[in-house]
Image 1 (cartoon, rainbow, N blue to C red):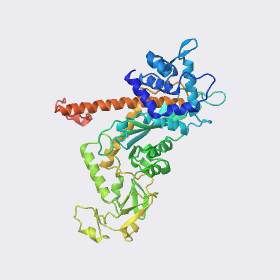
Image 2 (cartoon, helix red, strand yellow):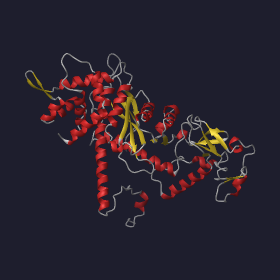
Image 3 (cartoon, rainbow, N blue to C red):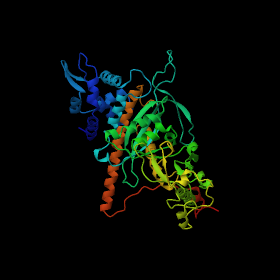
Image 4 (cartoon, rainbow, N blue to C red):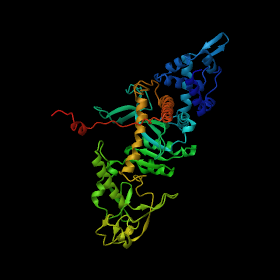
Length: 499
């Protein structure tokens, strides 16, 4: 038995999904030759060999096993007339029965509860036990997955793939344009290192998929909030503005209630001042003194490729703005309320309304013109902030300061997870990769692809860790990854540049 087959069977067994599905399948007059467990093993073998997600390839993967494994997995069984080799038709039969059990009675483009549970257990089973508690931080993102449908409407007014729909995707590469596609949105939650924590392999912990008629954000949120119930506590959830810009109840509020701490980029329409509360100015997820210099509210994230001087100037402005922020005194209570204190009362700025603050050094910012009619945030030392204030934009770090920038940089792991399964050198889930149409078949094959991807990432991480230990024992420097980027300014100032 090969090592790869042993690990694949271990993942299937740890997930526990095969016997549960098997128990729900109908029992015919003649017993099926291919069990659900063997079907999943064949699907994983198919993806481990970088084969397309075709049932014919699953059949070939099972037939390619040695005689002992074929007997053990039911690929070869003894019938009355002698040994019988598994046929493609039998693979198709078992797969169809599994799809029927996991599908909804009425197609609506969203996964059934039983299907989502299968996906959760299957993907989680590919995470090694010693790494499950290595990090509580997840980077989330969604991507497009095309259906194999011809996209032509049939005489009955439906597409060949009844659950797929038209969606929109942005071209991120050079020369790529925004375009429509016909298929599904696939959302992934990838494990990344905690802040200040050790490096961890970027393993996918959760996935969900749905038709483009459905917003992918609420679907992913529903999956994430169930993780604490499964014994997986939530830490930071790192997301881009596509998640942050949604209705707070569909993302931010639900995750905070589940114990998550958000680190996210804000949509341009959510940046800057967004009204007031008790006189304090709401901006970028925080409350600020009403006399904060308005120029500081125009602070935006650094542009890519910003110079050292530009970065330093940006961070100085962010630190000055932070001085005017009303400081949080406690964590949210069970109803989402917390208290904040005036920045002058906290000793961060000088203000004539707080006599004690005027004894601070002159290096502290000063409110030169206090309001003639001080609002509540100025007359009271502290105020209570309800969860409805900054419900969409509140997050762990001050946006867009240096601490936020370093923490948000971890989101690139989600991009790498998407890129790995779309890489033509690995899985390449382009149109035609899976020719079986429908939400359930595509979901199961994608889950298999992610399981194989997780095993490969865990192996690469273990190899690197072992190499680092070996180099350390030999007294050699540990290899570090550096971003090699030669800027235009560097080339223009090169000593050997022509005149």
